[in-house]
Image (tube, rainbow, N blue to C red; front, side, top):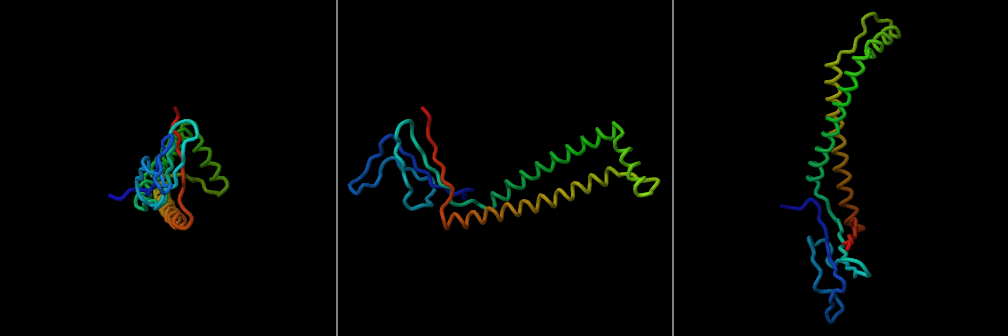
Length: 161
């Protein structure tokens, strides 16, 4: 199974050993080989350091995660809209808005139809979820291209003692 992100991880102890040519040996543990010679840091004080470089992101994983994330956001927005609609309906705000719009438009029986508004909101939300997910996948593909040219995102973790 391919990893969702390709990383190069190296760990160092307090004082890594070197061979006759001056290369570090011993504590180097690559997770996925993306950089032929990962750079190692020695600890200057506290605990161990671990440097991770994310060089590629799997586009299928980005699509799955972004669809889940944006669908969850859509569900939260629809539920919040329903709660606001019910509160406005209970307080008479919907009737006031309908009479206000009826006065402006000159229509005597102007009414908002709640099921049609809900269906329209869900359909527009689903289209937006699809579009934003596609944009997210395109952004991940661009990240892969740029990380091939200039390198990926590098994070250094320091273990606290």
